[in-house]
Image 1 (cartoon, rainbow, N blue to C red):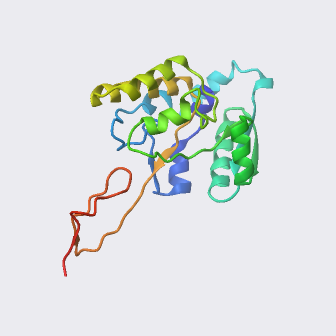
Image 2: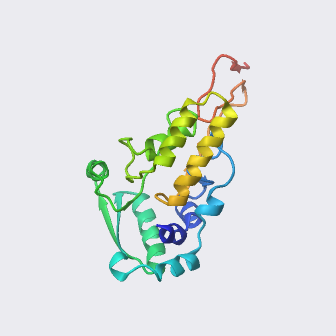
Image 3: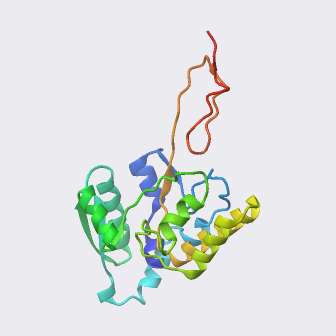
Length: 220
C-alpha cells in the first residue's frame, strides 16, 4: 500500500485532467474544514516513485497484480488511466475495469473492489463528516474495509468531545493514523466558485457553500 501511495502523482491528475477545478490535498480532510490543520500528506502521501520502486523490491511478483475499477465516463476514465500508468512505472501489473455506476456501487458495497476511485461530500462542517463514515470499522460507507481499533477509539472520543481544540486534535490524530496505514491516496478537493452581481452586498459563503440570506442586500 505504501508503494501505491508513493507511485501515484496527484499533481499531474489535478493539473492535466481537472485543470484548476481541484486544489491539492493536505490530508483526507479538505483544507478550510473547521478543525482541519497541518499538512499530513507531506509526510504520508507524497509522490515519491523512487521510494515506491525500492518498496516494490520486497513485493513478490504474484502480489503485483492490481485491478483498478472506475465508473465509465469522463473524466473518470482519464484519471484511471493516469493512475494505472503511474503504478506500472514502479512495476505493478494493472488491469483497468470501467463499469456502470449501478454496478460500481454494488461492487463497492460487497467489498469486492480492488483499487477504486471515490469522491465524498461532507454533510456537515466537521472532520468527522469525512473520517467517520469512510474509516470507522462499522460504517456501511467504509468501502476500503479499513479496520483499526485505535482509529475507532479516536473517532469516538472526538465525537464526544465538547472542546473544539481538543476535538480537532483528536481528529488530526485519527487522520494521521489512517494515512500511516495507507488505505487511501488523497488526490485533492474540488473548488466551488460562486458569482455575485456588483450591486449585491452582504453575501458570505461558509465552508459548505451555503450562506445566510438575512444580511444580503441589493442596491438599486
